Amino acid sequence: DAGVTQSPTHLIKTRGQQVTLRCSPKSGHDTVSWYQQALGQGPQFIFQYYEEEERQRGNFPDRFSGHQFPNYSSELNVNALLLGDSALYLCASTRARGSTEAFFGQGTRLTVV
Amino acid sequence: SQQGEEDPQALSIQEGENATMNCSYKTSINNLQWYRQNSGRGLVHLILIRSNEREKHSGRLRVTLDTSKKSSSLLITASRAADTASYFCATDDRYSGGGADGLTFGKGTHLIIQP
Image (cartoon, rainbow over all chains, first blue to last red; front, side, top):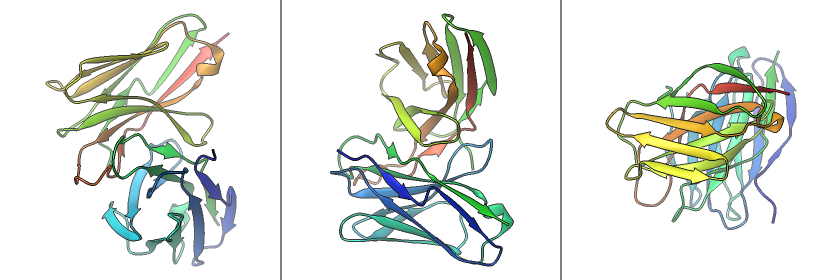
Protein backbone atom coordinates (compact mmCIF):
# COMPACT_ATOMS: atom_id res chain seq x y z
CA ASP A 1 0.00 0.00 0.00
CA ALA A 2 1.73 3.15 -1.22
CA GLY A 3 1.81 6.08 1.12
CA VAL A 4 1.73 9.70 0.04
CA THR A 5 3.97 10.30 -2.96
CA GLN A 6 5.26 13.65 -4.15
CA SER A 7 7.13 14.71 -7.25
CA PRO A 8 9.62 15.99 -8.00
CA THR A 9 11.87 15.56 -4.93
CA HIS A 10 14.04 18.56 -5.76
CA LEU A 11 13.53 21.53 -8.02
CA ILE A 12 15.50 24.68 -8.85
CA LYS A 13 13.66 27.59 -10.46
CA THR A 14 14.44 31.19 -11.28
CA ARG A 15 12.67 34.19 -9.77
CA GLY A 16 9.53 35.07 -11.68
CA GLN A 17 9.00 31.56 -13.02
CA GLN A 18 6.08 29.29 -12.28
CA VAL A 19 6.23 25.85 -10.69
CA THR A 20 3.87 22.88 -10.35
CA LEU A 21 4.28 20.29 -7.62
CA ARG A 22 2.37 17.02 -7.56
CA CYS A 23 0.97 14.76 -4.85
CA SER A 24 -0.77 11.39 -4.80
CA PRO A 25 -2.58 10.67 -1.54
CA LYS A 26 -2.45 7.48 0.46
CA SER A 27 -4.85 4.80 -0.75
CA GLY A 28 -8.30 5.35 0.74
CA HIS A 29 -7.69 9.04 1.46
CA ASP A 30 -9.65 11.73 -0.34
CA THR A 31 -8.46 14.94 1.34
CA VAL A 32 -5.14 16.56 0.46
CA SER A 33 -3.45 19.43 2.29
CA TRP A 34 -0.34 21.35 1.29
CA TYR A 35 2.21 22.85 3.67
CA GLN A 36 5.26 25.06 3.24
CA GLN A 37 8.20 24.50 5.56
CA ALA A 38 10.97 27.07 5.58
CA LEU A 39 14.36 26.06 6.93
CA GLY A 40 14.32 25.76 10.71
CA GLN A 41 10.57 26.35 10.94
CA GLY A 42 7.49 24.22 11.35
CA PRO A 43 5.19 23.51 8.41
CA GLN A 44 2.74 26.28 7.51
CA PHE A 45 -0.68 25.32 6.15
CA ILE A 46 -1.28 26.54 2.59
CA PHE A 47 -4.64 25.02 1.65
CA GLN A 48 -6.71 21.87 1.62
CA TYR A 49 -8.63 20.16 -1.16
CA TYR A 50 -11.63 17.89 -0.81
CA GLU A 51 -14.03 16.80 -3.55
CA GLU A 52 -11.94 18.74 -6.05
CA GLU A 53 -12.55 22.04 -4.26
CA GLU A 54 -10.40 24.22 -2.06
CA ARG A 55 -12.04 23.87 1.31
CA GLN A 56 -9.75 25.86 3.55
CA ARG A 57 -6.85 28.22 3.01
CA GLY A 58 -4.02 29.50 5.16
CA ASN A 59 -2.39 32.90 5.01
CA PHE A 60 -0.80 32.60 1.56
CA PRO A 61 -1.15 34.95 -1.43
CA ASP A 62 -3.10 34.16 -4.57
CA ARG A 63 0.17 33.25 -6.29
CA PHE A 64 -0.34 29.92 -4.59
CA SER A 65 -3.09 27.90 -6.22
CA GLY A 66 -4.02 24.28 -6.43
CA HIS A 67 -6.14 21.64 -7.98
CA GLN A 68 -7.50 18.25 -7.06
CA PHE A 69 -8.31 15.63 -9.67
CA PRO A 70 -11.10 12.99 -9.62
CA ASN A 71 -8.56 10.36 -8.50
CA TYR A 72 -7.85 12.59 -5.43
CA SER A 73 -4.32 13.50 -6.55
CA SER A 74 -3.43 17.15 -6.29
CA GLU A 75 -1.19 19.85 -7.70
CA LEU A 76 0.25 22.94 -6.08
CA ASN A 77 1.06 25.82 -8.42
CA VAL A 78 3.12 28.83 -7.49
CA ASN A 79 3.35 31.77 -9.89
CA ALA A 80 5.84 34.63 -10.05
CA LEU A 81 8.29 32.85 -7.79
CA LEU A 82 10.14 34.85 -5.15
CA LEU A 83 13.37 33.96 -3.39
CA GLY A 84 11.30 33.61 -0.21
CA ASP A 85 9.32 30.78 -1.76
CA SER A 86 12.35 28.53 -1.34
CA ALA A 87 11.21 25.84 1.07
CA LEU A 88 10.22 22.22 1.53
CA TYR A 89 6.67 21.72 0.27
CA LEU A 90 4.83 18.93 2.01
CA CYS A 91 1.65 17.20 0.98
CA ALA A 92 -0.52 15.42 3.53
CA SER A 93 -3.55 13.24 3.04
CA THR A 94 -6.35 12.30 5.39
CA ARG A 95 -9.67 10.57 5.24
CA ALA A 96 -12.30 13.26 5.24
CA ARG A 97 -14.36 11.29 7.71
CA GLY A 98 -12.70 9.53 10.61
CA SER A 99 -9.23 9.94 12.06
CA THR A 100 -7.59 13.33 11.76
CA GLU A 101 -4.15 11.68 11.56
CA ALA A 102 -2.40 13.12 8.54
CA PHE A 103 0.04 11.10 6.44
CA PHE A 104 2.81 13.16 4.89
CA GLY A 105 4.86 12.68 1.76
CA GLN A 106 8.62 13.16 1.67
CA GLY A 107 8.23 16.64 0.27
CA THR A 108 9.55 18.64 -2.66
CA ARG A 109 12.57 20.82 -1.97
CA LEU A 110 12.12 24.01 -4.03
CA THR A 111 15.02 26.39 -4.45
CA VAL A 112 14.40 29.74 -6.12
CA VAL A 113 17.51 31.50 -7.42
CA SER B 1 1.12 31.89 12.07
CA GLN B 2 2.52 29.35 14.50
CA GLN B 3 0.17 28.24 17.23
CA GLY B 4 2.22 25.62 19.04
CA GLU B 5 5.55 26.52 20.53
CA GLU B 6 7.86 23.69 21.46
CA ASP B 7 10.35 23.92 24.26
CA PRO B 8 13.27 23.45 24.26
CA GLN B 9 14.32 24.42 20.73
CA ALA B 10 17.11 21.86 20.91
CA LEU B 11 17.92 19.00 23.28
CA SER B 12 20.98 16.77 23.40
CA ILE B 13 21.04 13.72 25.68
CA GLN B 14 22.87 10.42 26.06
CA GLU B 15 21.45 7.25 24.62
CA GLY B 16 19.28 5.48 27.18
CA GLU B 17 18.16 8.67 28.91
CA ASN B 18 14.63 10.01 28.74
CA ALA B 19 13.78 13.02 26.59
CA THR B 20 10.97 15.43 27.41
CA MET B 21 9.64 18.07 25.05
CA ASN B 22 6.92 20.58 25.78
CA CYS B 23 4.41 22.33 23.57
CA SER B 24 2.19 25.31 24.31
CA TYR B 25 -0.69 26.50 22.17
CA LYS B 26 -3.06 29.44 22.16
CA THR B 27 -6.59 28.51 21.12
CA SER B 28 -9.09 25.81 22.01
CA ILE B 29 -8.34 22.57 20.24
CA ASN B 30 -10.06 19.36 19.21
CA ASN B 31 -6.88 17.35 19.44
CA LEU B 32 -3.11 17.67 19.53
CA GLN B 33 -0.68 15.53 17.59
CA TRP B 34 3.04 14.93 17.70
CA TYR B 35 5.10 14.34 14.57
CA ARG B 36 8.74 13.41 13.94
CA GLN B 37 10.82 14.67 11.04
CA ASN B 38 14.18 13.24 10.04
CA SER B 39 16.66 15.53 8.27
CA GLY B 40 14.12 17.81 6.58
CA ARG B 41 12.12 14.99 5.08
CA GLY B 42 8.46 14.06 5.48
CA LEU B 43 6.73 14.07 8.83
CA VAL B 44 5.83 10.83 10.57
CA HIS B 45 2.79 10.77 12.81
CA LEU B 46 3.61 9.62 16.34
CA ILE B 47 0.55 10.03 18.50
CA LEU B 48 -2.75 11.90 18.73
CA ILE B 49 -4.37 12.97 21.98
CA ARG B 50 -7.90 14.34 22.07
CA SER B 51 -8.95 17.34 24.09
CA ASN B 52 -10.87 15.16 26.56
CA GLU B 53 -7.84 12.93 27.23
CA ARG B 54 -5.11 13.71 29.74
CA GLU B 55 -2.48 11.08 28.98
CA LYS B 56 -1.73 8.60 26.23
CA HIS B 57 0.95 5.98 25.70
CA SER B 58 2.37 4.37 22.58
CA GLY B 59 5.41 2.14 23.02
CA ARG B 60 8.21 4.31 24.43
CA LEU B 61 6.15 7.47 23.96
CA ARG B 62 4.03 9.15 26.61
CA VAL B 63 2.02 12.26 25.85
CA THR B 64 0.18 14.42 28.35
CA LEU B 65 -2.30 17.20 27.67
CA ASP B 66 -3.36 19.98 30.02
CA THR B 67 -6.09 21.98 28.33
CA SER B 68 -6.33 24.41 31.27
CA LYS B 69 -2.71 25.40 30.69
CA LYS B 70 -2.91 24.89 26.93
CA SER B 71 0.16 22.70 27.02
CA SER B 72 1.32 19.21 26.14
CA SER B 73 4.44 17.19 26.75
CA LEU B 74 6.06 14.33 24.86
CA LEU B 75 8.25 11.93 26.79
CA ILE B 76 10.49 9.46 24.96
CA THR B 77 11.84 6.85 27.35
CA ALA B 78 15.06 4.88 26.94
CA SER B 79 16.17 6.99 23.99
CA ARG B 80 18.03 5.50 21.02
CA ALA B 81 20.31 7.04 18.41
CA ALA B 82 17.52 6.50 15.87
CA ASP B 83 15.32 8.90 17.85
CA THR B 84 17.51 11.78 16.66
CA ALA B 85 15.10 14.01 14.75
CA SER B 86 12.97 17.13 14.99
CA TYR B 87 9.71 16.79 16.87
CA PHE B 88 6.67 18.95 16.21
CA CYS B 89 3.38 19.38 17.96
CA ALA B 90 0.38 20.20 15.78
CA THR B 91 -3.08 21.28 16.77
CA ASP B 92 -6.39 20.73 15.08
CA ASP B 93 -8.25 23.80 16.21
CA ARG B 94 -10.99 23.96 13.61
CA TYR B 95 -13.37 21.15 12.73
CA SER B 96 -15.82 21.67 9.92
CA GLY B 97 -17.72 18.47 10.38
CA GLY B 98 -16.48 16.83 7.23
CA GLY B 99 -13.03 15.87 8.44
CA ALA B 100 -9.64 17.29 9.33
CA ASP B 101 -8.80 20.87 8.53
CA GLY B 102 -5.31 22.24 8.30
CA LEU B 103 -2.98 21.52 11.18
CA THR B 104 -1.11 24.30 12.96
CA PHE B 105 2.47 23.36 13.77
CA GLY B 106 5.02 24.73 16.19
CA LYS B 107 8.66 25.39 15.32
CA GLY B 108 9.81 22.06 16.66
CA THR B 109 12.36 20.64 19.07
CA HIS B 110 15.55 19.27 17.57
CA LEU B 111 16.53 16.18 19.56
CA ILE B 112 20.02 14.72 19.37
CA ILE B 113 20.73 11.37 20.98
CA GLN B 114 24.43 10.88 21.59
CA PRO B 115 25.66 7.24 21.53
